[in-house]
Image (tube, one colour):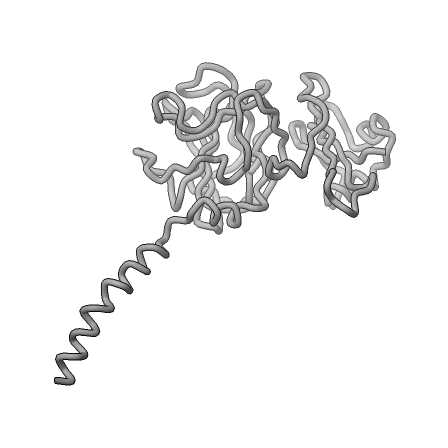
Length: 258
């Protein structure tokens, strides 16, 4: 009798354990993604021109358009899983992140990182272009659970990771999720390429919390940028955690608002 009861319990409880396992599977829910990617940043400056799920459901990412050679950044720290040229993606970079998500940066004009390389959040990884199967200069950005596959069955709407993604929306490199608590003032300027960011709902908000994003142009130095914004080289280095005054064209700097 005891053996019969034990077998009955095992048979009855096994389906329950199995269902619990399936519920708590490896694929994150939307609310889980918001936690996993809470600190992600936008990968570039530009205007969103297409979103996830268009073209009869075949568009598995978002498109951000701007000028040629606009800087492209890693949305979070990770390892470059692939970096190559393809007929469809053109110059493309794949980054595997610690939260088990993989991001894709396609149609680049230049790749600054190679396979196996570690990158930190906000690191310059390439430049925007029009390579591969592309009809204009833009970044095609994708997010995948675990890994990218040819059929893209693991694709996730980048809106789950980055926040609001609407056609015509302006986004700015190194800015975090687009939420109601953050207002972006100004437009992406062809000549200046900068935006002012204010934290409106922060009870500790002060002038030191406000800054512009400035994309370094050819020939610029920290000294010339400091004069343009009436600040100091020391403050620029402190705000951007620079160990020296070496900067590169296409790099983005935070510039304080006085």
